[in-house]
Length: 325
Image (cartoon, rainbow, N blue to C red; front, top):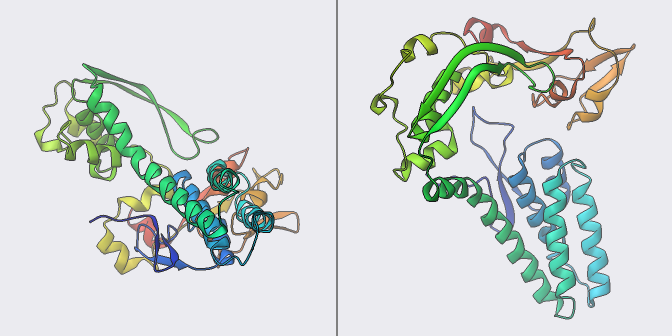
């Protein structure tokens, strides 16, 4: 199945609502800038490639019905659209990069008819989508052209848990892995971490091109038995634990399986960094304590990532605890 994260369809921007994943695959059809702004702000669109594509298509969405008769007026409208889209996620570099590209196309072609400039902006947006879609394939292309004779992974000391830059934990794993098949090596590493190899896009693509083996049953493992290594629990980020649950179970119990951020008030220094980082504005300071509006929280865990003192932990619903998440 060819699932597209974002595309232009039926005169609207069609995107996967990423706040519903992995429990549900749901699409949004966006035909106005305000809805796009909210989708970006609320992390329904996330990830650098998708943000760039959304910004570029958003620029076209904002000017496609422009009545401007000259480039000066059209340029002013495009500038307003670009500034509005950029305000949805001020720290997202790919957002600005894509807007700069489509605006540059307009300036370069300023002597052409406005209708032609609109078409060129749309073509540039489509080009950005194709470039971003090709990134994972590009990595596999490099593998094809420069296949390593031997790949070595130093896993003597690993890091596990949440927020590598803040509250991640060093772990003495004492593992040294090597293989002439880096796809097989990545597959084994994924299993050790508790991730199914087919969920890693580059591994999936490389295996599909017969550039390596991803099927664990077809991989000859020497040295330490894999079952002993996998048997030692490896702590994944708490927010990703739900990805280990089969989708059929999630669909049945999705209203009961919940992971959400929670403040350890004795650690909190009340710096308000989490308030500024929250894309949905659900965090506030009440009575000198951090407070969450869980009715609107989308569990993106941005607050946890930016907390300088690791005072935000992941809280689990009773069902999630019972399932060992």
